[in-house]
Amino acid sequence: MKRVLYRKNPAMFRNHPFRFMLFLLFVIPWKLYPLSFVSSLDFPTLHEFLPSEFFPWGIGLIPLALWWVWNKRITLVITSESTVLRRGLLAKHTNEVLHTSVRNIHINQSIINRIFGVGQISIASAGSAEIEIIVRGMPSPAKVRKLINDNRRVYTTD
Image (cartoon, rainbow, N blue to C red; front, side, top):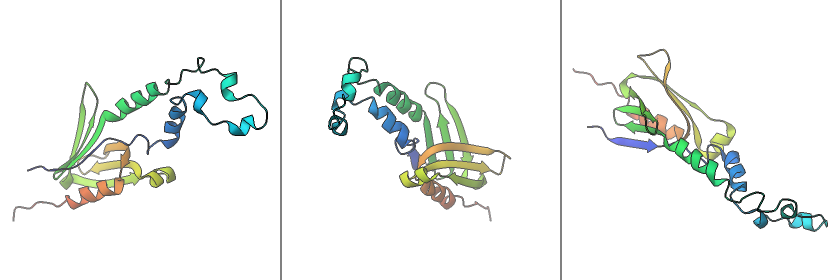
């Protein structure tokens, strides 16, 4: 019987923290930004140059919503027997690798990824010379590798 051990989508904010902060700049109304260091120098503040009507304050919600939908279309599912990568919202693409045929598990993390606990996971099987599953921005990649390795036992009929 297959048991689901892990089911996650790629992390949004931890995978791209600088992109998230950039989008967040356009979610908060301009007049709420603290500009006390500028006003102490007797210069005009930012919202005097750029009125809030010029930059509508909710414009950052659109890319955040699109980014959220883009991440929800990817799901990595680890069961007791296989690893399944599902992609797509309306049309679906599924790639499944049985744990008994896993040849290599590769985890790639930049320093920012290591700080935020995310990484790229690549899984190669013995049935193909190529990497079967590649998914970026997955939370706890070491946990994923451990779950797969713990369930990699080869069944024999002795």
